[in-house]
Amino acid sequence: MATEHYHAHFVTDHFYHIYNRANTDTDKLFYQEKNYTYFLKKFDQYLSDYLEVWAYCLMPNHFHFLVKVKNINMLAQGKNLETVVFNAIKKIDIITLNKIINIVKNFDIIASTDSINAIKKIDMTALANSINAIKKLEMTFNNINTVIEEQFRKFFIGYAKAINKQESRRGSLFQNKFKRIHIDNDTYLMTLIHYIHYNPIHHYLTPHIQNWHYSSYNTLIHQANTKLMRKEVLELFGNKERFIEFHKMLTDYNKIRHYIVDD
Image 1: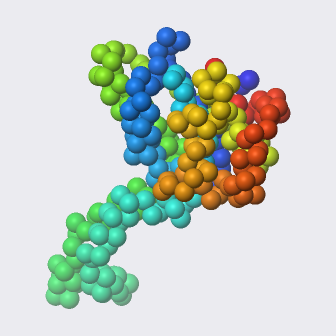
Image 2: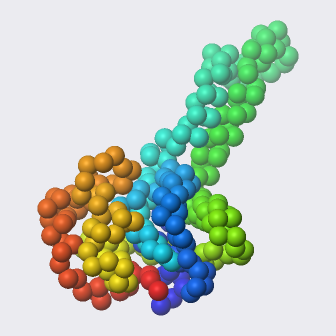
């Protein structure tokens, strides 16, 4: 399979199967139960502004995520950029700014009393902050793939540092470049969710999906607060009952082999 297939570019409003594993066959990603929780916490910290999580499964030496890249309107609500932009804009005296614009339009660009007084009233720092924040926002929209890749890099580094300290180990914890495959079909999407939740059975870690506590399955069928796209996932299958029944079925994964990344 072509390398490019495993490293599809992230595009707004598209689905991706994301996978990575420990650097060597003898390494683990999760050594203690608390590591699973910490991993999800760090994932949320670095990537929740950019990705919706529809399904996931964490295994001792690898993980799977099914995500959807958030749309531009949702990204515009990102707390950091929104705070910077709107706090800065609120400090600008728009009336004064419009007065200067009118002076320039009228070619009255000589240092008249009106123009000097108008310029003095503008909070130049606030104006500069607004312009820079808007440029940053525009860069995020135009380079979403670069932004997400960088967030994953920070996420992996941060988690690896914590595990290396915990286990008194050195070196890379993850394989260098995480894999992601673009998903373009709802039928494959449903089967892939089954595959992700079925992974612990596939690797002989448990005989029942619901017994594995490090996947999204139990969260999706219960009512606890979550950032998972529970409503959307269950609607994809029809309802919760059909979601559960679908997961009881034996599924032929050969038909989605093109969308699977695993060891």
